[in-house]
Image (spheres, rainbow, N blue to C red):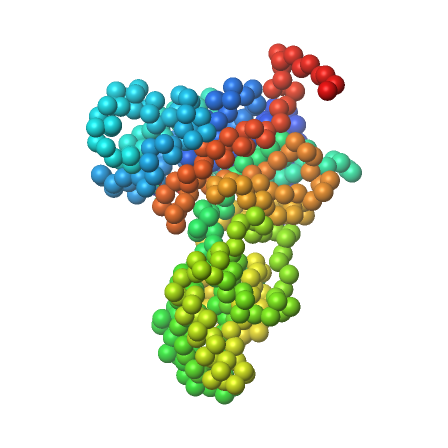
Length: 427
Ligand SMILES: Cc1cc2nc3c(=O)[nH]c(=O)nc-3n(C[C@H](O)[C@H](O)[C@H](O)COP(=O)(O)OP(=O)(O)OC[C@H]3O[C@@H](n4cnc5c(N)ncnc54)[C@H](O)[C@@H]3O)c2cc1C
């Protein structure tokens, strides 16, 4: 992550921020996840000052992917409100009622709405939040506001106006950003830290270079596969079946591949890095071996055969880590997944890394950033949200509930308490 010194625009902009109102929450983006947050706020009659920054000129939901007559994967009750508050005015049923289609919808006897109609539902919800959304506004930097010896109490968000290109800053006590990528794609990102000078080929090139890698050599070629996608696992399986290859190292951050860990000696694994904002959540249940796929079982078998055939000289090492630098050095060539653009690489956060311990997973669609003790004030929070599920092609079912949790966790500013009489009593 960049430091504040490397971003002079942000540094000077911080002074301007002092004249701006401080928001209780700034949400970066206004997709379904943030829209669910807006709805939860409205439903709770919260007085919190909230701002939604959306880089697009208006609300839109993957317009190019909505084929006619295709349906949502989820039943209509998994809209942006019902599971949290079935009495919300933002339920799908209320939307149908407003459009005078509720009986016709019921007559279909199909629980899954048409995508086209769900898109219209989302727009119908979004247009009720015109007052708190800024379209054409891209968040380009988030910086903690520091005071000597004090925990961070606010964040500065630098915003770029998409039309004019001009920048301004706003301040907030809490921040919600889109997850770096949706959960399943998150698992497919390349790991960080392949050292320069290391021989690298991408997973896309693998088929083309496959024969070349298989040529008999002495000493044998040691390879590593870096990634977490199905494609990487298939490549690993393919490499293991080649008797000419030496040691194979598989470096992944996907907890779904945890069953492979037992192939290794516990002591040889590097400790997990917890200092990154993208550290894997600790609460995610590790899948059991019984759930592992045929492919993983085949990997076990091939790895064992490799050990037997080479009389213990060559084996498979599985490294669960975020940083691939050290383990990949043990190989002659690294086969690496193409990296997705993510928030961490977009440079959105500045000076945030030293404050961060990791992330706590709260359901499928929400992660709360955990800060080091005393680094950030109690009421100053940061969440990452994603309403994506099912390989990124469906809507997470828990988004309404998780958005409600963000709203419930939001401490009110003094401004938010205006007009509210607070009575303290000793129990
Ligand atoms: C091509 C495609 C097709 C899909 N089709 C379906 C489908 O048919 N059905 C289905 O259920 N799901 C589908 N999905 C899954 C989809 O991701 C979810 O339905 C849902 O859109 C996720 O909501 P979200 O709010 O988490 O993310 P998004 O919908 O991606 O919303 C995030 C928003 O944040 C904005 N943003 C990001 N960074 C910034 C920034 N720095 N500053 C300002 N704004 C920012 C983006 O412009 C975007 O509007 C599809 C996904 C993709 C990629």
